[in-house]
Length: 405
Image 1 (cartoon, rainbow, N blue to C red):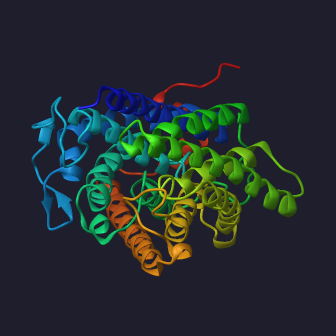
Image 2: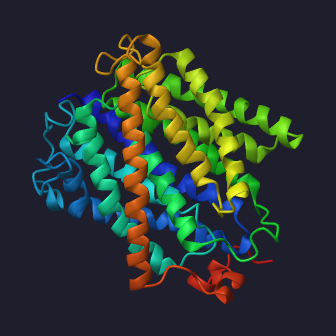
């Protein structure tokens, strides 16, 4: 066991934990002031709810002994057999508990990401039930498929830090959720202006900061690959800011601060599956194209008429898909001997594998999310009433106000 690697992973776990409160600020600033606390709460409560799900059964379903390459067994229920010694099958240089808590932070932020799609219109009780069900039946199986010994990892799909597990899954779920719930009251006729963009920028800065733990920590060691993932993460994010602003300026006439931070998140998403497999120039291209592609995808919600409140589909869905496919283009064995060469380095089959993983992830996450939404709606109800929506989630769901004027 390596003390240096252990300390590094614990720090990275703390950085990833900070991303969820950062996400809360990022989302809450884009809502109307009457929904600021309701939006913050949906991310903050995920820290508590998903942690309990993860330690009781979620971690075991994700990383327990493989069952038909689809789901983990019951080896680790209630963290049984998860102790201070390393598990050589998962992470041989760090305590099993350190690996578990690092993965826990990924499980927490993923359902919180989905909440941006249905911001300003879901009941808090419905959100709690949906989060428990989604973490159990969507996140844990997908995590097992990719990282826990399941079929997708065995097929050779490359996902360094969660392009499929975190971003494509949450983006696909977000599309299902905003279609299932329908648009906000007044969508298309009212102006939904962000009430506090400085809050959103602060949240984006925390996400960018925490993402170094997200991606570099996925090397599971304080080594050269972690340094490489740190650098490619930063390069892609910077390039994506510029990519987004280029097309935004040409399309809308002016660059915006909201566009800059949205581009940053798009770049972070796009590089996530590729961070430990591609070189610096590959990261630059992935980020720049990702910023432009996500801006274009965000515009589709107007064309198709769905209300993705905070652009989860356009950024996490599209960015995750592009990042996974781009990994199949730019991956290099010279960067990571544990990976593979991509199409641009002579290996067409890797691109094909990435494409299969994209389709499987999106179809599975969308279909299961739709089913879980219907179950949750039957159990406790999902959508607030028109009167509660007009009043705002802060008052109607929590009997509080974010601001005293």
